[in-house]
Image 1 (spheres, rainbow, N blue to C red):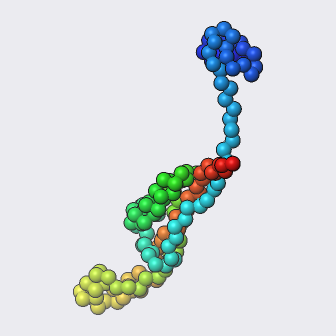
Image 2 (cartoon, rainbow, N blue to C red):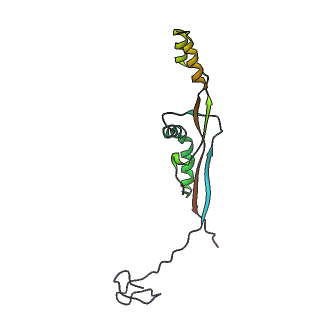
Image 3 (tube, rainbow, N blue to C red):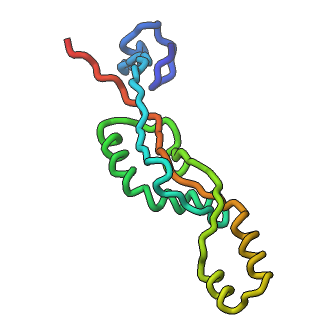
Length: 155
């Protein structure tokens, strides 16, 4: 073993360096015992589906921005209690439900088209539009794996 101050060789197990007299403390790595738990927030399926926007990523960012005010205060309580996240947080921790459904609802364009024309083309267009499935996504859960050092039992 070498002295960390002067670099001279010292006998193993020495508490002081023979050359410079500096105190040598052998540090032994003590393994930490951890306890693990999932931080989980859930939503009811089918309560708040969002129609896909330009891309899945943009839609998920939008949905997360709308729902993070429910998740972050609870997550902060866990962090204050000594828990450490070991998986990603934010949008990456969200659990998603992706589905498609047919939408036969009438919007503004359909009403305008109905008023302006009673042509066969409008009805064909409306039928084709209504038969294409529209993609939706909803946030159904937020899960982060957490850990913290186990409390030492006092004897």
